[in-house]
Length: 311
Image 1 (cartoon, helix red, strand yellow):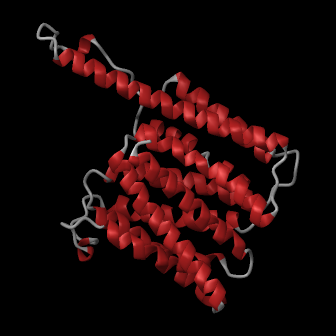
Image 2 (tube, rainbow, N blue to C red):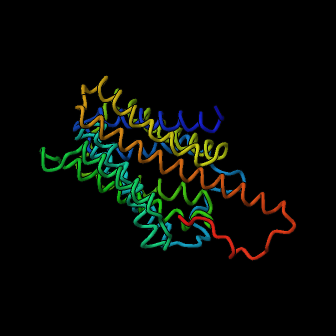
Image 3 (cartoon, rainbow, N blue to C red):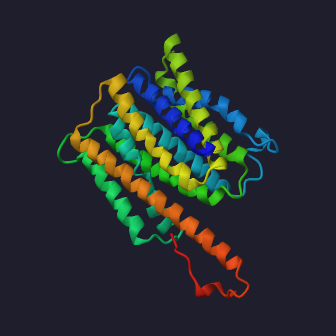
């Protein structure tokens, strides 16, 4: 197994464990207080992800797209707060199923905002994933809670964050992309938690430190994964979070999805994996074709004669 895939497996597993700890707080602490401490402790491992040739004090300097950088930070804060509400109010697996609608929203935004083209196969798989989510949540057949809405909104804001990042990542410093969202998260949660602040107990403080450290560690491991393995190998590993959600939800919180929910979760995973493997196959075909053309001296130089698939 490639080392990058192992990093990804550990990263997403660590993320899930950190999320499970957050769920355990329930209504004992406010959502904003949980978010504040998790963000603070999450910065500790993130320090090690800073490139050696960049300085933290440069996070606010020479931004190429200042408006988009700050907008990305705001959407990230919104996504984080919303998913914390969901973790503490609805079953673990249902939260993940709704959050995993993010690829659908990313695709829609890529078409409307980035003017990318998406083929019929991709749309079909995204529609299949949506059907899977409906099997898990089943709106109209059961009472939905506020946490279902916040999980869905989390997917929307998370997709916005990713879409903006695709625009600014090539030109912005990594310290800016790490430090600014964290600073926004800390300041926003600190302001919102102040009116109802309750000092955590020693046990709660330890759990917050553990959860935040896991989030930060997951971020470092995911960076390592993407540096050591192709995206087509790393992306499918994210669906291990569904398995963790079912296992941790059952073991710690006595949450047991019914048969339809299991089928829906399976459909969500299947649709996501098919999308990823299609992308990986296309990338390999394109790479081999390019290599083949490079070895043919008689190959035509007009690339308009052959057009690769557009996504």
